[in-house]
Image (cartoon, rainbow, N blue to C red; front, side, top):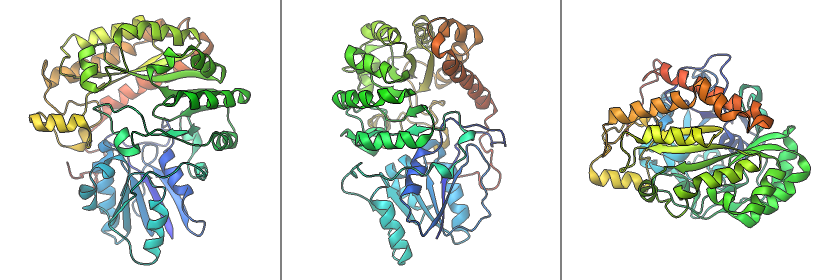
Amino acid sequence: MRIKLIAPASNLVAPGPRTVGLFPPLALQAVAALVPPEHEVVIADESIEPLDLSDEPDLVGITALTAAAPRAYAIADAYRRRGIRVVLGGMHPSALPEEALAHADAVVVGEAEGSWPQLLSDLSQGRLQRIYRRDRFAPLQGLPLPRRDLVQGRRYLVPATVQTSRGCPHHCAFCSVSRFFGRTYRTRPIPEVLKEIESLGTRTLVFVDDNLVGDPARARRLFEALVPYRLRWLGQSSLDISRDPGLLRLAAKSGCVGLFIGFESLSRASLAQAGKAGLNRPAEFAEAIRRIHDQGIGIEGAFVFGFDHDGPDVFERTVSFAQRLRLAAAQFGILTPFPGTALRRQLEKAGRIVVRDWARYTISHAVFEPLNMTRERLEEGFRWAYREFYSYRSILGRLLPRLFNNFGVFLTLNLGFRRALQVFKARTRAPYPAEAAGPTG
């Protein structure tokens, strides 16, 4: 069979020949690696190149986050109108499989390992099922190397990404990770991770684990094994790493130059609403940041606006904090009730969800009624935070001189955010003619 795997764009402007993405679609590279060799497989990433809908594959597989769901459904409908089989998977179809089934011949719920090979076998025998769902999570031992040869690495800012674990031991109210990957923390064998790193041909990479230190003892063994490779890597961690000086020093020794950390809020009440009051303690933030900085590791902090205790002053307080503590970068988001989360159940029960168009679920739109400000004020403050934090004055003031050794890495990241702000301004509600209009949730 000729199999086409697609990563659809959300509501970004249509890409051009010089468009550069952040990361390649690792999930589709992993799915492609599960395809038996007798089949031909290609990967299309619509975030970096226009999608050709005139081709004739035998099977189309589409992965979708919530914001990209309308576009994914439109692509699926376009292929199915021509009699081509379509399979949908990923976070959003897994949360709402019945919705996805209206646009697909089959839906893969959860991880593809175990389900995808069975689906291909069933299809070849003419007995394709409607839903593929495993009773338990697949083991992470012996996974084939992702098919990185199927993407244009030069079209990505960070072409080398590696996943060493799945799941998260925490259960944040607004997060979809624990529903999709489970609250159990599952890890790949370290020798297999090292083998994958050796295959990359680069010493600069990003670990895309949702929490690289979810199991501190295992993280210590991983970092020790990475030391001889002389890597320069970035990853995502909880604040727990700042509470373990030995683990933190070992992370730096293994080549860590930056960590993405979810602070979420400076308010204890808001953190309690998020389900992170026990994990994040605002009184400790400044000291935790200092400890991480002292190891030469930059921090990209994540902050969420729109909790029930947030008033109009939350934007200036948060940006001021991030600038004063000289965070290398920051990601700001509007609280968003994604399908399957505890937050969505709470807001649905309260009747506060007012926007059901999945294309607006980008963490940059207010899709529910906040308690202490209007939706318009929430969006306005969100945009102001980005403009202020990524002004040239703010960038240089934060990066110099503390992060001089890795200045180039973080300057590139900051300029990338500035570029993203320009793209955000250029977004339209229907950038793709003809097949653009997908259904809403």
